[in-house]
Image (cartoon, rainbow, N blue to C red):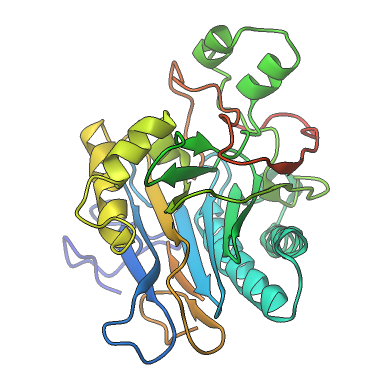
Length: 350
């Protein structure tokens, strides 16, 4: 391998040039994906899209995402590698790919979305745990998934990657997840106000994650039935730290001529807004229109941009910034939700 800058040939295992110190590009600095509906329509309607970007302050992109589509449902997974844990760039990639693949297989086999969601998160956690070489240096990442179709949206998560509902009409946009973070735990216990908790340097410490040191994988799962068309957004904290209010996200994502028909353009607008706000972290946003455009045929995934049709992926949790303008708890859901909430386990992880 030759250094992209100085032409040197001594490249370390973690991708840095021993001569000039440049980290070599690995294809994950910026990735965009569109997933068209299977079938013969020309042009094929877009059923999911996403973008991941290194941002303006990080040397690598430790986020990853994957999307998959079946005839009647669409799935997306976003994972954010924990920066303090070595190897988390690989952890997020494996978790996203595994999660989307297991979701698609279980749904195709007839599993209901909540059951498939739990199975996918558990398998992703097992695969990430296998990366560990020592107990205290295990790779780790967050995880959030969405299954959209058949009149419902099912979301599952571990950590502080989030899902949002962005309706194209009333009612108001909503945060669908509750962060597994120190700040949310303190507020839930009544130990601190939301303002004080989010101003604390420990605010973004994770209380649940995927990794060998994570303990039992017990994802939160919620399902709701939207009352109007809109976009389901799953994203890393590199987006929501800069645009934490659901209404702000909706205003950006839906500010296009036909955002439900062009979710990649909507994802691009969200990325540009995060970069314009400072681009402090890796940024990942995956969007699924609701209801998904009709499709013909069987399961199709989207995996790496270089892969044949199969799971298609693009692909860290950030250090805490002084404040978080949102309390990390779900806003009012657009329809009655069925939530499986499990208490955070273990000690917070930076």
